[in-house]
Length: 528
Image 1: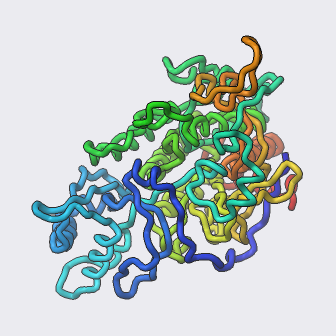
Image 2 (image 1 turned 180 degrees about the horizontal axis):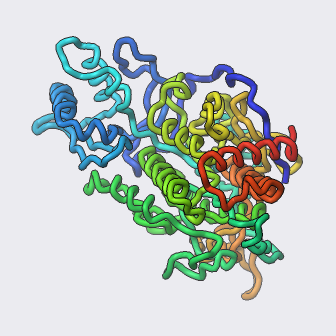
């Protein structure tokens, strides 16, 4: 395994292919009622021309504090009514978390709802002196982006380098780089906790497709949650918030993420294939178990098994993690601390200045880094320099008094060259092996494809029978948890070498110092 951490050196430069179109498969868009924004779409005066992005056309994200203000909601509704639309606003919470708000046509209007067009109406109204709509408020209302997992070949909805990438990394007849393998190894020993040098296991939060059964994790099947005190735990608070998000549109055909189990999306196919991202979260957990066995994983299911996640669900999960960290720090509860967040997904934003002006996602990520949580995000698999968020937030300057900013991770081949599929640019601040990696896979996944057979007890390799519990896969999705594991190991090491940075101490100031010390150790241990 090869890892390199790169010190920040100013802004990441400019994109060179900002107008490329996104070739998102229609099946994915149809399943999630999504749409790709055309760069030629209408734009309100004074706002930047859009770039291609994928979004949910029936949903806008509106912060809770705006939804609590009845007068503001009334003006927003008035503007939208003028465009033949109305909003079904959910009950607002007590903070400023953005909530998905459903747009619907007024009676007698065409059912051609487009949240981008609605957003432009609101932006134009904010510049109208005759309408009492604050420009800053409208600036905090946004599209709900579709985020995509960072695996290559399948799970990646568009591909700018198809010939070289597909031919090089495809292994299975299904066209995926994922293939079952056997691993002749026991799970790495976890080490004993309780000494002054190793007072607590660092926790890596994995926001992904959830978990599946595997003996390495003490999960024999899907009948019970992960065992208490085991390697994997779950965060019900986050899953509850994601369920509330899904409740805004009970008539939607999109399958809701009801819990933490990695299950296939419902399909009308008579012979459904193994979804492109089935097992993604379990695979990532296994990489962390191999590379940082002394750490724990907090698994949160935010992504569907076809590799699609919704922006509001990502934000809700990160908000839940931040609240948990806040409780840990204010109530001195080390057992509630989350030290690292690993994100193997992202999106291409419609606004060139996203790193400077995006509101919701950047805000919650900044809150986490202020708390001292180390956030790592995949750079994406589009063979492009165009910024992939949240990874590209790595180019933002570190905030005074906060921990390190986002660490964006690109993928290396086993021979340490950069993988053809990996995004690249000065905004990528870490590189780790992400091609040809082997890890855990749910033991109950077996698809319809059949291996060629010979005699009754002889056959070829079945490409989608994963009962062995292991697979090989490619993507910046998998480089990211390996880098997160290196950071977790560094946290243990710096805590062991400096009693003032003990993992038992979760005071915010100490957590921030420990995070910086761990990253500095990574710079020294994993140079470019």
